[in-house]
Length: 496
Image 1 (spheres, rainbow, N blue to C red):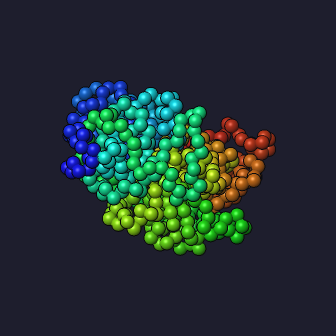
Image 2: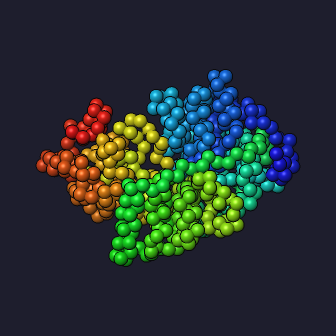
Image 3: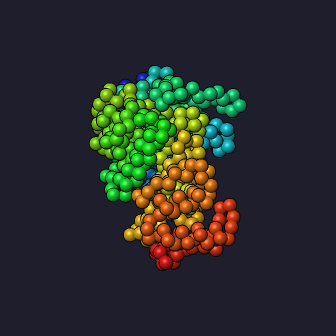
């Protein structure tokens, strides 16, 4: 424990154990916790509360920035400690509880959670739990590897518990840009016109009188699961890079492209890593999460600046960045997620958004959250914030999976997260469909020709042809539209 990290001396008597801090949480409370894609999350207080919930009948509503690390969501769910969760999760145990109806889940656009709290459309936060590198002399706090919704939680929560993580160097001071937009109807323009613009302060303001507990930890973030590019992800990346190269030839883009946003995961990493051996240079990012590939591109000289809300990287990359922070600190910035994901900035900067789909249909509607229309996977995350407002909205998925028993291109998606109106480009390992400027029937044929796995192309073409014969602006055979999903549930394959 290093009390020097509590620079406001009047708060030093608030130091306690995680168990003591967790005892402040009462049944029915709304708890807001820092954490965005495993980064900067509560490492000890929420796990201590999960242990307490094993012995007591106690449930809370838990709000975060996005997902938590160290299986914390799973521990809370298994202990029966959650009545409601928002706005995003990736934990298998929690997912099963949600799909069983035991935990209620609100799947939100990540830009909207803070807005709903500020507008009082959600219940007020009783206790905020925020991981920090240290507490400054004025009582303000320095975040660690994410900002997420911490600014809003710190400002609106009735009480605050701080976890000071000594595994994070104090030198993180200055990598954050803390800006809070005004409440409606007095909101001003957010003055960001380039990813590298910093418009706020370096610390999160906090009223010291709200601090009820301070806990010390030295636990690093859960490392990201980084999978090496495989045949399919490499093929998807190649199709996207070829598309960009052609856009440059047509004069639509330059070799610098426009700011890039990429969802988290192996496909996004493969796409970004593809830039290393390309002719593109001086690239920038305006995204949610900085992954290993971000720092690999910085090291290669291809990426000049990256803006996001969190850093979620492998163990090796974590040490590369934080053991050499001076080398990287002028190359990236972390912001609140209602700034990193705000629609107006995404539109103003002309972001190129690359996100992952579970499935899409022949007209370009995208399902990114549900399996067979009913069971949640993770959540919409920030993909909707970016897709509707991007200069280019790109969605990627494999054409088929499970030894080709499942087609990811279908007559009709079983759940719609992103309508055809918000989707410009669809990519599978088979090929790329550019849907811009196409009517529904043209879009369908483009998708069938370019994106569908060969095992399913003939049947999908038959569906479309017969639907067109029946007529309609967006032709469908409603009696067959979900037959592929039904067949999968009954036989284990979508194939006839």
